[in-house]
Amino acid sequence: MSNWDDFVSECSQCKKCGLHANRKNVVIGRGLNKPAPILFVGEGPGEQEDIQGEAFVGRAGKLLDLLLDALEFKAEDYYIANVVKCRPPENRIPTKDEVEACMPWLRYQFSVIKPSIVVCLGATAAKAIIDNDVKITKIRGNWIDKQGKILIMPTYHPAAILRDIRKREDFYLDIKKVREKLFHMNSGTN
Image 1 (spheres, helix red, strand yellow):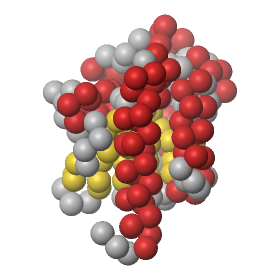
Image 2 (cartoon, helix red, strand yellow):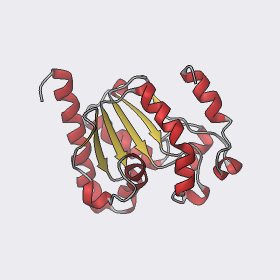
Image 3 (cartoon, one colour):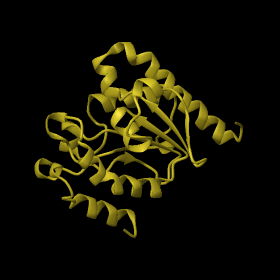
Image 4 (cartoon, helix red, strand yellow):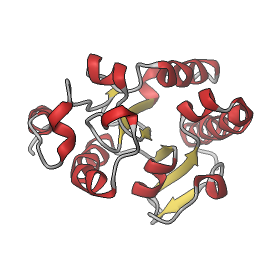
């Protein structure tokens, strides 16, 4: 892939796993800038994302947008993508094979977006990016330094907050840490 447009075209024609069979749209992501200092990575598109062809536009996306606005993130600060680009049936968790089939697409997004910070939204993203054996409840809220190049913040997926309001404060505090880290990076302080 020589450029973003080629990537979008190739990804839109992907048939590497069975998820392509029922998709309405391949969902590449959402964001103004490539590169962007922060890459949020979720699990996969839901119903609204599949219909609209854009990441995080359903209820979970609206919750994430509200939090990002409340913490004064600017739209150019981040890009939002998913591990898998096609909606799993009934919004089920993507299988290991489906995740592996989509990883080259996500790796390409990393290479173009060039994030300094990656926020893993939920267990699927954390397993794909950090380690397949991680437990989100054990690692969320803790910075992980990936080879001195990228800082990773694992946290809950916004959909988990919609299902269990008790996770709301932890989610807020995790995203607040990301905002603070971005501020320090932009100001040249640690």
